[in-house]
Amino acid sequence: MNRWHRAISVSVVIGVLVFALSGCGGAPAQEGAPESATVGASAETAAQKTATPAEESVEGEDPTEPTAPPEGAADEEAEESEGETDLVGTDQDDAGSGGDAGAFREDALPIDLAEVYEGLLDGDDTADWYSLTVPASSVVRVTLSAGRESDGLEFSLRNADLETLGYSPYVAPGTEEDFSSVLSAESDEQLYLEVLGSGPYTLEASAEAQDDAGSGADAGGDSDEAVALGMEESFRGALGGEDVADWYVLDVPDGSAISLSFTPDADADDHSITLYDPDRYDVWSEWSVPGKVTRELRYAVDADRGGTYYLAIDGGAGTYAVELSIAAQDDADSGADAPYDVDDALSIDAGEEYSGEIGGSDPGDSYRFAAAEGMVVSVTAGDDVEDLLVALYDSEGSEIWYDYVSEDTISYTLEEVLDGDYVVQVADATGTYTLMIEE
Image (tube, rainbow, N blue to C red; front, side, top):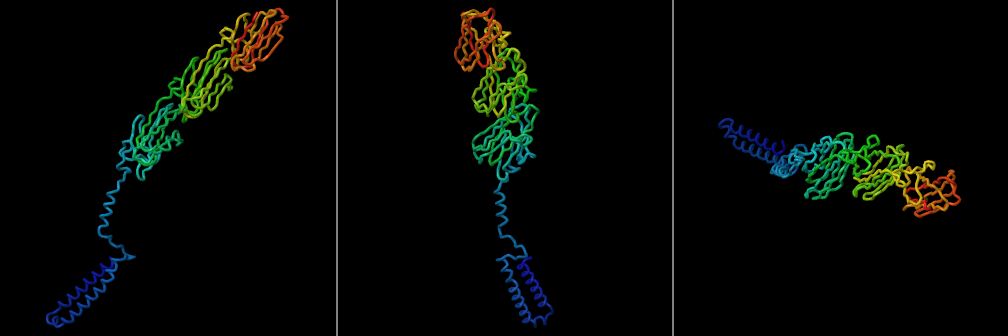
């Protein structure tokens, strides 16, 4: 009760006392009329004096008693309250849920693949989390469109350990951004999509199975899970996210030649490629190959070095293309690899031009011919062949001449020939050559 109320109460009490005194008895009361008037005047004066502090209290606050709100204040607050709209959990309908998507992973709103959803971030609601289940060995793609009324949005895709699989730092109002991530082949995965910012948006997540080398799945991440390749292959593969390596296995016959080209796609991160022999030795590799750059290999396999080879591709996210051919060597039209050992040399005829190749695990080729005095042995190194060794052995197996040739022709004329076959050997280089014994 404030001072104004107390003043009113005092006035009422005094009035009651005056009334009571004036109404007691007949004549005595009349005789005391002047006294009653004096009492009434005193009461009125007292009331006026008592009321003065109450009137002052309207102008200032009493530190011990709360004051009544100004007239109309409650109505103004009601109008302000009606003018503010709480979008969180009421007007929102994130992904058709009838409410707000959670602001944390624990409250993530489940969504389905291949569906387009609408969402809204507004006021204190600055984060929406969604969860989705994606099949193993999939390529998942997420697209987010920021509404024109938005302030620009940010979104990311995370795995169950909250590791980032894809991220777009800024989606401008009225624009669209997307990214993709390649999942491992182990099992279906629970993924999370986080949208940050302010404003309306639409989002869509889709997934399709990997198809590395036409396998309908992901090529394994090591040799034990490698996808088998044939003798002639033209295939594509994909890396990214949790899929950081693709392995392929090749059955390579003895005396074969492996031809291979490797090209990451234009938008791919740098990739690396390695070829392993049956002993798991790295026999060829190219590191950090950028997009649209092609690396090529021609690898000759020795007559006894066939077996199980492996091709490993690793690196950042992106797709790549591989052209592969495994065919028998055809040294001197033999349909096979000419042996390196002089004792096992391949027989050829004088007067004919022959071609062959060496390199890789094939150190060299040896050819046997019936020697005669005055014959000319000519060997021409192919393009880009450096320091090709050419050696000549007599019928007793003794080396009688050798020399090196690079992208050119070298010749030797036989003199004082022994009876029996001679052997010419080409070795210690990589590439093709031609050979001719001129009579």
